[in-house]
Image 1 (tube, rainbow, N blue to C red):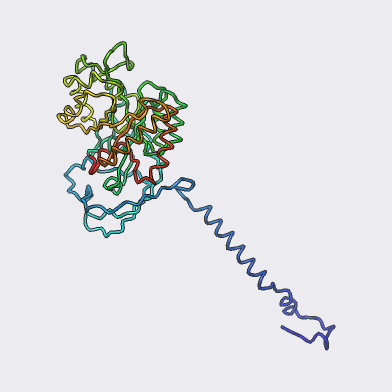
Image 2 (cartoon, one colour):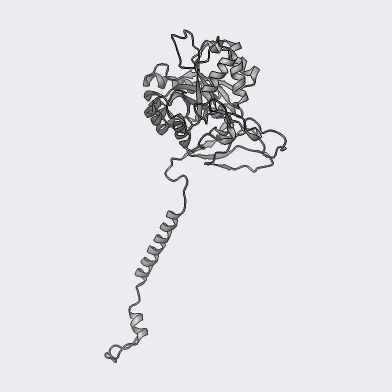
Length: 387
């Protein structure tokens, strides 16, 4: 709105003229709009939940493999779920590029994993049997086994990939709370922990490990050569013990905490070479929906044949990574473990929760992806092609 300022210099301007004269410049108006948009976007970002905010993300490209059948969710209701059906703990995004047809698909996938996907606190009520000693694990309704429900979920694309796979189990957890906390904090969730039954506040420590994504096993003391001078601890399972005595000892250890997928031996060279003593123990493990992992410290063992007789899922580790607990020796053992995995498709290494071991495994795990090797929890070794 214009006027002749020379001919009418003293004429009072109207309200419209005064407002028009004070209008903001295009630059100022654009700045106001940009600021308002930024404020609105910031408010939306703050109010929107981001479950994985702040978590490191690992992207693993999974190569194409043969078509396979999943543990179909469309199976008849009267059939029990397959033992290797994975339990969904959440936190996994699997983008399937091939079309899904009924219950089969191609595993050409991009899998994005959070290395610390939290696992549910234990115990889970359906998987607990109350006894005079305490809470024992049991198979729940619908054939829900502790070995499945308490396990860390591993995508089928990882289990069925052609890449070498390695599982690491570190034992002795719970005995030293400080070292246990360091292992929980510093190691990726795919590293599995074995808790000894003699620590304090074991359930709290176990649930801290599970909250950081670590799967847990129970470390069971078994009679070694040279017992009792060489003594694993109270209520050791004995080669010369009766079935009732060993089962009572087993139940005592089982009640120390909940949330374990299975059992691993602590020592046990003599018991593991005595089939008549080992058989009722393994039968009880299977009855309660557990799996068994044996370390590589015992050369003469009948555990594989006894596990087959009792139908107990069983695996044996190939390497004790810290038999010589120095950084150099552990690095060499881990390199040997990689060779086993490349030759056979998978390998299992066991060790102790020593500070030197934790530091060496942490450094080694950070370099695995660039070498084309997948780190998986122990439960993955009982699934799919590996099972």
